[in-house]
Length: 256
Image 1: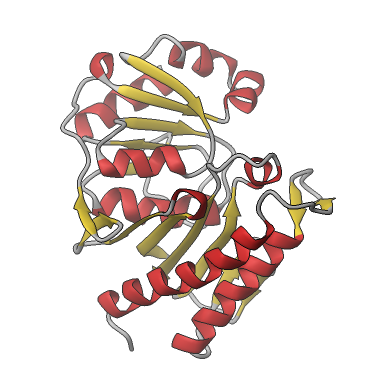
Image 2: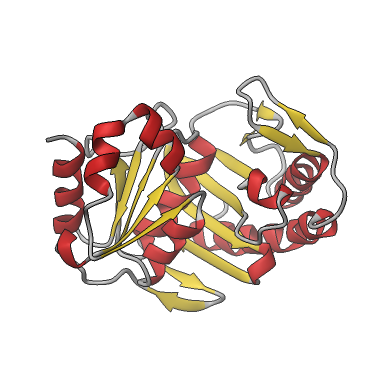
């Protein structure tokens, strides 16, 4: 069995190779399909996931993989988890804030994660108990412990406003600085100490599990809206925060 550092280093290389596939399609004509959940998918999503799968198979032959586009191959609580293009709508629009997510689960829990931003030439990586980095340099969350001084990202604002109107209303008055966002990058900014918290909504396991490993490895907290650890069965409502005190304030705001 490969150790966690071997897996993390391989994950960085695998996503680096796959990023060339994604970038070969970026800002090029794309045929867009609509999946059953009404989310878009393109040839770039599928080709990028296949490149990641090929990389995993090369380094870790026979290990289980769960991906957004091709589902589960193999079985067990120990598996790789892949979101080839996190932010397909951004990708389609030529907006460079899409990411690439790769994680490894052991016993169903996220052990390591990589957030690669191909158009920004940034890669955030972390493994539980081993710290986190951006482009090879150590990163750590901020020391912000109060919501009224926090730099807060509110992700998926349109869905939040429609489906969790009261919580969204409270969030729009929270924090010292607020930004509306989407997808993985705001969570990476929390891991790097540039932002302090993210409230997110309507995510799938491949959206939040790789990210959670990076945030937690950088010293942060990432749970569901009730404060529970994130698993494959979580409901897709998540909170990332730099400190336990800030996290607790956000949970209190979301669950008055």
